[in-house]
Length: 138
Length: 82
Image (cartoon, chains in turn purple, green):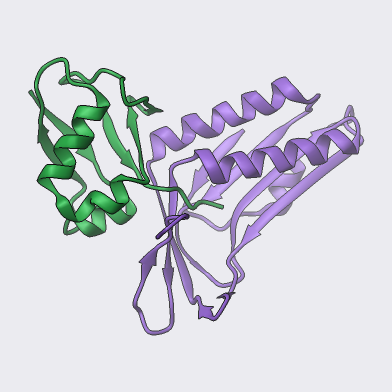
């Protein structure tokens, strides 16, 4: 299951959504808003998305993960909008019969999400001079 | 033909907050033609265009991919979700 949401992410509910009697392992990854990047201070992050394409890409990532590992359930939830320091921007939860596959599939799903899904964040520092984060900036 | 290009993030900021821009292209144009036209129309976007992908009908497209008047086109600058 993949979801884009403007609402705070309930990571307990996301984790419960993947639990299964057939799975002895559940792996949860949370991405949260960090207060500093090097010397730069962040107050908020504004997340924007191209929603129809992002949902397609996330669905494709789920399908790829299911083809590579024995997965019970997989959930990717990404928040959109303004987030304060400490809030959860993304949750990935995976269940599998054994922990090695749960860890590997969870790692794959968050890495692919950060690489392939059209979501962008704007860094809002204390002085208000905001900048879009486009990795690889010259 | 005139195609409509959707803008997000840094492109929207570079182009005065516009959500879309029209681009005039010959019929049977491809993604490379679109990028060339954008570079000429909007020189301020060149550095970001060099690092961006194009989506056609909500899929990443190769530079040789064909575009028609009904294509859903979006510029995808380097993503930063997560």
